[in-house]
Amino acid sequence: MQLSTDMKDAIRNEAQRFAQDLHLSDDQKARLKTAMESAREKIEDFRQSHPDISKVDLLAKLKDARAPLRAMVTGFLTPDQLAKWDAEVTKAKSFLGIAS
Image (cartoon, rainbow, N blue to C red; front, top):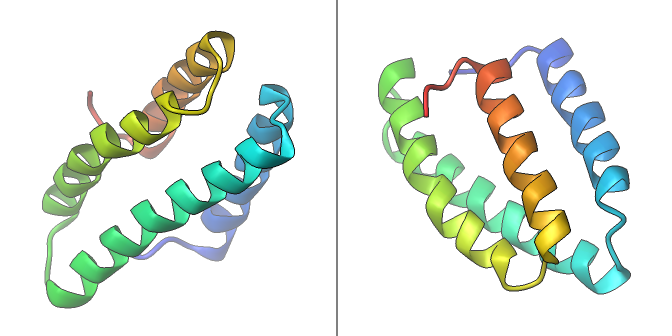
């Protein structure tokens, strides 16, 4: 499942808007960047080792990757930031067409 340049730009812009809405400290920004990069690398490694994966199977793998990522962010986001995070994840799932 390859994303178009427009889709990548839309995701990047939305992530930047969301990061501003969270009002992250510098430490939180660094920790979130590390967590997101780690999650992205795991998905990319999976995609590389399974080049013929279907969109459905890749979306299932993304779903599996959400729980560890959320566990990481609960360690450094405030309760208010975490509520915003959860709301944005719900919006992102809808945007990407991912069920639960």
